[in-house]
Figure 1 (cartoon, rainbow, N blue to C red):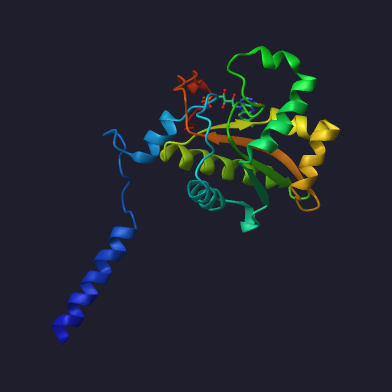
Figure 2 (spheres, protein in one colour; figure 1 turned 90 degrees about the vertical axis):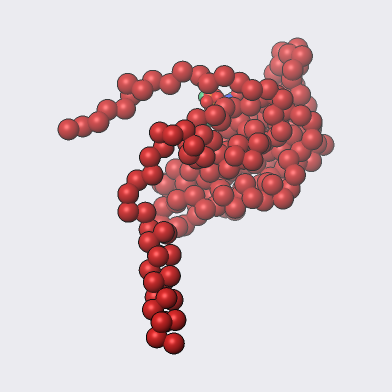
Amino acid sequence: MKALKTLVSILCVCSLCSCTPTQENKADDGKNAVIETIMTRRSVRKYQPQAVNRDTMQTIMECGINAPNAINRQAWEVRIVDNPEVIKKLTDLYLKDNPKEAENPNFKNMFRNAPTVAFIANDTTFAYSPVDCGLMAENMILSAWSMGIGSVCLGGPARFMKSNPEANAYLKEMGFSENYDLLLCIGFGYPAETPKAKPRDAAKVKFMD
Ligand SMILES: Cc1cc2nc3c(=O)[nH]c(=O)nc-3n(C[C@H](O)[C@H](O)[C@H](O)COP(=O)(O)O)c2cc1C
């Protein structure tokens, strides 16, 4: 019995050790899945026509709401639209104001052609809410990419929906709470292109001694 108790104690200590990293895991062997996901993700603007499977969107949202957020107030609200009729009606309104867009042979809809769109609203009474929403958005985007789902973060359609009275009616239908304001949209879908990385300016980061 004593031997059994000792064995259980050793196993508990071992499992604790394995959950508590005591030294950094170097990523220089190129096998770190998170780094791989971050470094290969690009904004996708060409998609296959079908909406993202709702179970997959559910997983993406679970990842979204597990983002760090100020005082765990979770100052965000999200609506997901994958109804092609709604996306088309909004796009028709958008094209009335931006007719030239329709001349682009790749144009399918105003959400950079994505068949599934997440609308993220922030709490205008809480200063950190836009930060919370941004962190949530990135969790969504990266978890999506890790599962082969492309995405594009979009400010333009959010601005349009707030400024165009007819599009604003759709926004009202989304029923965001009082004091919540649409901040950004994220288009999701199965990618039909593999965009190259745009250059980044590493000089913007400096280590201070
Ligand atoms: C807050 C925000 C707003 C954006 N709005 C738009 C947009 O309205 N239309 C668009 O095509 N891309 C938009 N983007 C995507 C950026 O253009 C893209 O992330 C950037 O050029 C870097 O390219 P990458 O995502 O492929 O690395 C937005 C991105 C962010 C973070």
